[in-house]
Structure formats: C-alpha cells, structure tokens
Image (cartoon, rainbow, N blue to C red; front, side, top):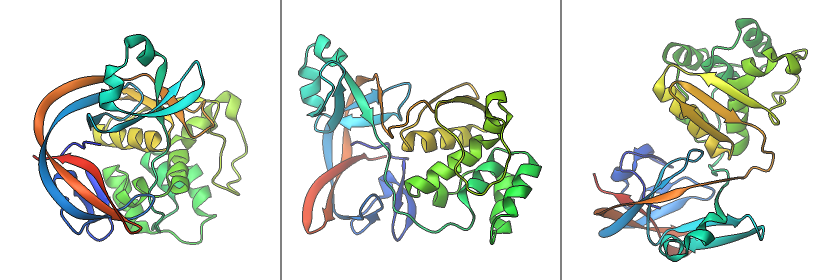
Length: 275
C-alpha cells in the first residue's frame, strides 16, 4: 500500500511517526511487530482508491485488493494492475472488502468507555454514575481531553475491544436518548446495544470528526461525513462490510519502498511517498 507522507504510523519504540520519517530499524505496530530492515527510493505510478465509506488510500499497481463477488458470493485477492485489465462488467460485480484494523493491545490510563463519553460531552450525571463504578481514574488525562477534545493515540491505535468501547462511549448519549433505546443506566458493563441502528453526530471540530471517522472505519463500521455531521451505520454485525470504490490514476512519483522482517521472513511491504 502507498501511504500519504503525512500519515501517522505507530511504532513500538518511537511512538507515532509520519510515514515519510520511517527509517531502518523502526518497529511498526500491527497484528504482529514488523521490523523495517530496508528503505529505498523507487518510481511508481500510483492510484487513488476512493470510496464514500472507506478511508482514502494511495496504491501502486502491485498492491493487492481484497474483493467480494456479489453473484458468486466468493472472495478474491487481485493486484491493482490485474483489476484494471478486467472489463467493466466484471469490476461492477466486485465490491471492496473492509475488515477491522489490528493493533497491539496496550494499557490505557482510563477506561475507554469513559473517554468516549467525555469526548462527546455526554450528560454529566451519566458520566458521574459510570465513574462511580471504576476503581481508578486519571484526572489529568480527563482534564486534557475535556479542554482540547481529542482522542489520545493510546486509545485510537489500540486493540479491537478498546476501540469498540471507546466508540460506544462516544455514541452513548445518542443511544440512551432515543425513544426506542430507553433503558435503566446500571453500567454493570460497558457493553451497550450498538448494532441495528444508525446514528448521526454533530462534531464541530474537524480533527475530532476525522478521528472518530477513522475509529469507526478501523472497526469495519460504515460511516461517512458531510459538513460537520458524521453518519455511522451500525447495521452490520459481521465485523466486515462491502463498499463500492473507484481507482483514479495519479502521476508517476518517487516513493520510499521498505522491506520488513517478521518471524524469520523478509518481504516487501508499503511504499511510502517521499515528501
């Protein structure tokens, strides 16, 4: 995958770095740690993958697309170059498959559900009632979040369950206020009904809106934004969704090509645009 040169990438020892600053020796965090063992400049023709429901991606012709045939109900891996050679009628039968992003689980200073409620300014009585169920909280972090309205990286780039509880907290106020969702707030668990629902959030801060959109999409939950409104579709229970997409050719450019090492194997990986 070709990545925008300003994209944030989580490394094990050096925290979050922009993609153009990745160097030999960095350890990239994913489902398993990946060690960068080589960096080299190469020229590629790139393609912009555009979809209303998915994060924009910059791809080379060697990147692999994971697609679903809506008629045969089968999955296929195919390179961008081979996909572009297919006739239009074939491409129209195939949808892009979106699955959750995997990050390594790491400890957080506060309960992610609480962080979510505070980010979206949930009712103070609800927040206080939930706080009373927790063993400890980090007031300094909570104060920073209340002042600046942002999602800390330790929550945004954590494992699936942490991110899901974070999103549950963000939409909590929306769910309990719906007439069909009225319930007693006992908070014996942070698992509240999410699915079979559509929710819209008004987020005035553009950066926060983009963070929440990335959060939902990283969980394979469909969402898109229009102006300052974020629309989230919770009608999918399979941790996977399909969407239409198109590839728009970009100009040939110089990118950083990196080699990664994992479990004794060396393989080529992301090509990262040079600034």
